[in-house]
Image 1 (tube, one colour):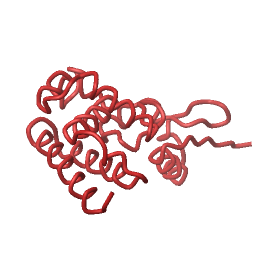
Image 2 (cartoon, rainbow, N blue to C red; image 1 turned 180 degrees about the horizontal axis):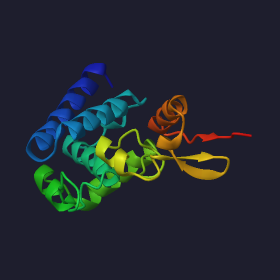
Image 3 (cartoon, rainbow, N blue to C red; image 1 turned 60 degrees about the vertical axis):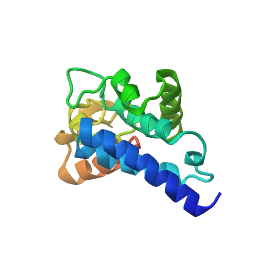
Length: 166
């Protein structure tokens, strides 16, 4: 497939997702959506070349929504997955499967990969704010500043890091 066809599909998927963001979400989600679509477009061969654009747009939002508690009423922003599928005129099972594929592809989860997590979710995540020191979980904020930086950078890349003092 040509670069032009991929670019056209990426533009369409991004436009659909952007429209959803403008109506239902916030700037932070928009940035994560752009980042995820960009990563999908750079895979070789890009999975975005197959399937309906609306399903890809909904799948990207759904995948990000699952790790950021988008469908949990106690968090803002809140959007149910039924509302998401109604917006994109997609089927819940199809989009759920696409989102699962995307999460698997990028090892996206709430406990160990924080690359696609909103800043507010990171701040409230126990696992994001803890690190292993001599076999014990310790708050990153309890570490010396230079180690905090190393720990945060590792967490952002989805890597586990531990420290030994002995």
